Length: 496
Image (cartoon, rainbow, N blue to C red):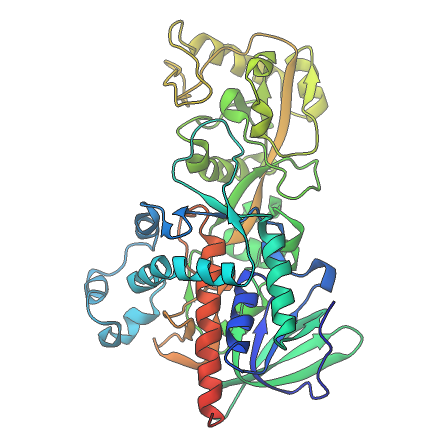
């Protein structure tokens, strides 16, 4: 059950906004030093946890003691765009010697990547010591992963339940149905609390010696999504219920007082989902074994360019750019000859099945004639030789077809036909706040903003492409660090 609220709502050492992996890690780490901590969460107690509550909590790790071999490289490959060479060269210096403008640039600082990679194993051990359980993980496909994974046993919900219970036990005060609105500052500019609205109580003032923003991205804010991501944002929706609570106030309130932005505000982590479903993460990953057509009945992308877990994000973003942001995965009945092909889907809705393409088109709303022509052209381009192997990249590719299909190119000629509609979900947004290795927010002049911290999706860390299975890890590592550093600041200001 929720902790009881203290009599004085205005005086804490550390205030944490958000109750996902980043916020709970911050709250527990701060409280374990003896700091008096409050957590503000806009959801009800039963729906607490944001995106973390609904994730399978895959972790890009070889095992509990080591990140994957490609962990750092994936971040380096996607850490920003066209940085001025002089500023890039300055990053080889100690961070204290970087030019202020370089510290404020919207790119992922190399020391952040190193800190994250080195901080993952200790963070896993720390979570484990608090009762979080880890184990292996299945997959939503048939082919081997491009990189290894472990997972939290029981997913993000297990983490939320374990860490919330521990936080309550050590005295963290939780305020549910409470939404942070704006930051408070001293005359010198240090952050000293915030204003928040509480259900049935109106606006209240919470004072503290440090504020940690761990309240997610802006995937649940339609206006911000369209403003930053563009017109295709009209068709995006969060991948799970927790994302609807992530409305971007944490990012906005920090930017409003001069915080530096970081991360790719024009991009997001995309996953292909079934729009007919309200289930958590209703993925459709079977399209490599068929074709994708848009509402106009046309193929528009290579359905099988590489391992599914390394390529689905690019494919899903292209789907978002199609008319009405939707596409259709068309399979023939040979899919049922593939053992366990259902591992490629998580939607709770069955495929639409019909004896011919015309019936599929009428039911789902795509152009019949164009789709029939697309399938005919695809079938003629499929090779007469080659061994179809759904459990490996088989190299069975089309010839003379644009766009090419690089693997699994076998004709669609065996009725009945099956189809899934697919849209792009917005799992989380990439744009957020610039921080240093202490999770302190940096302002637009490259200086630390005293008293203000950020962790999790509120931090801008990703550019272009998401290095899969790293989001929970960054939340734990930087949330924990934010809590430790904020508590130390609060203790120093209090003379402890």
